[in-house]
Length: 269
Image (cartoon, rainbow, N blue to C red):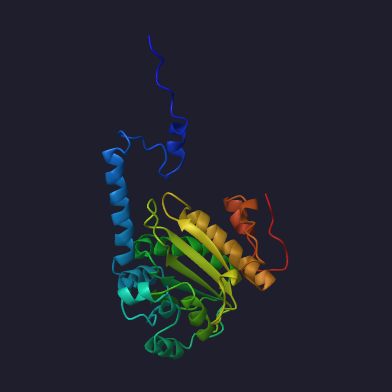
């Protein structure tokens, strides 16, 4: 009797990752099912980029949580320009600058910006639940929040101009991340202390992969609250602020111990 075929050493890893491994083969090519699955994933990623952003629906969801909202847009007039001209997505339109000037929201501790980015689908699905999960931390710490700003055709750096015009100590920008072939609906959060035009990515912290298959709303809210408190304590964000939030277990007790920005280190469990 012949020997049984050798077991593919990659097969046991399939259940541990959504990466495309151990796909098998049909002669010299991929099996048809895998070719079709790849085509579907590519189509979903393209749809995530090009799906129109429904800022009104996001505003209704945030207002249902009790938050005032403002809607702004970048200098990119449409999606095609936004994709070709990233620089325009990093600055506000003239009308939006006037909107923020009229808002007269000055001296706030934190402004939350909800931006479409490169995946409107991610923002539609995850932004409001994440804000809801974050609210108890901010309420407990007594943070002064400005109106929630909903930004269309927005890149990450747009938050710097928004935060600067609103006189905020910090800005946290929730944004649809660049879709991958296994993650078309991933939300990211970028936190910047002392926002102003000209800040670099080295001066902000990112919490990524917020979605059902990645970081949960509770985990993401806990991490963001920890970063906000530490940024206030240190007076900075970016490379000088290392993520040590994992040293605190995500329990009801640890949530009560989370610092509000004092000079004491967080309790570690």
